[in-house]
Length: 316
Ligand SMILES: Cc1cc2nc3c(=O)[nH]c(=O)nc-3n(C[C@H](O)[C@H](O)[C@H](O)COP(=O)(O)OP(=O)(O)OC[C@H]3O[C@@H](n4cnc5c(N)ncnc54)[C@H](O)[C@@H]3O)c2cc1C
Image (tube, rainbow, N blue to C red; front, side):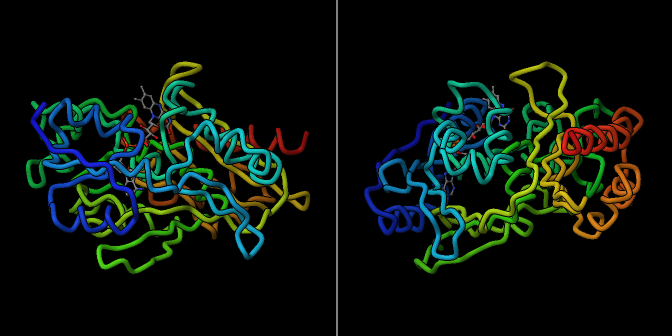
């Protein structure tokens, strides 16, 4: 692990200024992803700005009747929050499907959204990876791709975004709130927040260098049955092969996002008009244009079957 300097920011302005002074700096929240990546020398910040003291750890009603979740709210606290459990059950279920109790006690809302891919080639410095080292190639092509992306992929990258929480937030139409290096506030709809890989897979979100996430806003409760179903190789402590986060209304309409298949939580609003016709009709539109490999083409039918199970559960 390389040496680095560390400071504990005591205000948002101080954190932004520290980031502006150090181009190689990273914010650190729970540290559950960043520190692992630093130990492997995949992330090499020269300076860490600890944002745990910024007071961004509250969950409050928004003026519009939704919920404002501070960037530093721990995954455990968010999942257990009474309002979240009652009005945004999908989010609570997605959170508890992720990681382990100990990790969720440390992991934060912002850190979870920004956690990096679990592609094995990204984690192995002996392999080519355009995400880890732009322009070096992608060893996943011709390699082991069972876990990797099937839709929205590019010639440069097959990685997926691994967050369970982000899938729920995508289905719930969350908005990410930030402060830029100049202090300016931005609101980024979650659908625009994560990027597809294209030929710049190392640029994973719309955040500018030094931009701080301050919170995430959920719109007013949408009701419906809220279900998160995660399919994985082990029953716990494993990332999703495929996951479906859904809000299903009594009239059969709904909002559906899928995890484990793309470089961002995958949602196609047009596909939701097919929902009342069933899982097959919807997943045909949802997964149109997919480019799976031999090893991961099972994910296409797995999406359909997982969605079918979600619809059945909603009917029951
Ligand atoms: C063994 C293991 C199993 C796991 N399983 C799952 C799983 O099944 N599902 C799942 O979803 N996740 C899983 N995780 C991932 C875990 O959820 C993430 O590591 C965690 O959510 C990251 O949050 P953090 O606060 O620790 O982020 P950190 O590690 O502190 O930061 C992550 C990134 O976010 C940036 N950052 C943090 N806060 C801010 C901010 N306010 N503004 C701007 N940038 C910021 C940091 O600079 C860094 O780049 C697992 C992790 C481990 C280690």
